[in-house]
Image 1 (cartoon, rainbow, N blue to C red):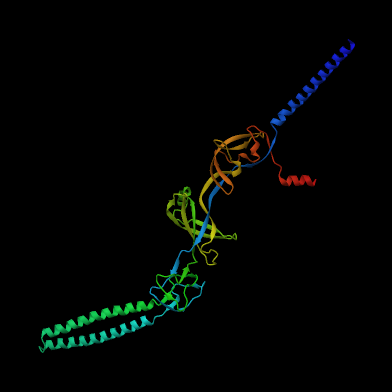
Image 2 (cartoon, one colour):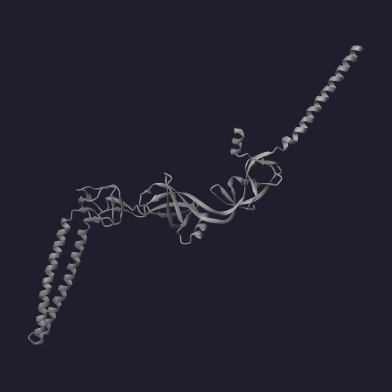
Length: 379
């Protein structure tokens, strides 16, 4: 009986100890639970600013020549001389090629001889008409003789005009043997040499590309077209082209296409650039930047501060007691990492970093600047 009582007493003592441990652990968990449910979150905040915000568009642009001419002969003939070299800069009217002009020059000489003969015949006929008119006045010849002389003069004058036209045509044909540059620019590869047969329907003898000024073609979203036309009614919007080496050139908008591309939803535009230094080269690509419009007195925040929820866009606003609340906003535009918004007043402090774990009512504190951390470590 005594042994059984001792066993019962041990069991009671163990049970009491187990209850004590259980309630002690539970109390500690209850004390720690509020701290785990609502810790202070470390965030980075900024103040919403009120300022003018330019809406800058960026697009990929391709460089192309404003004028590009393929040089071909107007007549079939043999090349006698090449007066330029590949890659040379030429001026409008500069002589490029000379063709074999011997046949055309002989036609010119023949037409000149015929014209001289016609002029001599006309002079004789005019003298005869004058004499017959004098004789008619003295009644030595009849009126028929005078009329015949006048008809001969008229016929010779018509023939002289025809020969003058023939001489002009021969001169034009002879002029085709000298091929000159129709525009100024840079020459491409020359496709013929001395002795080659140049043909109007054949491959170009060479091409001339106008290098200065030069054009850059690019496409902008069609939704921006109304803003661009409203901001620049004269179509002279300033354009900046950024080259591969990082340098930039300034130009002006010169062309807006008369229709939008239905597949891409873009509108083609062209800008002209001065290119005296030949920094822009036809066929290359550049980055184009232009200001579509400017939002005056817009409330702006860093773009990462705007959070897109299931139904609305919102920001976390820091309250005077260092808690946060959700505030719905509308994003009007985003440019260069900044967002212009409505539904928010300038000077409002919002969270821009660390918002992923926030909930309305959560306590926050500002993250310690890097400079302050370095000072503490130095101490």
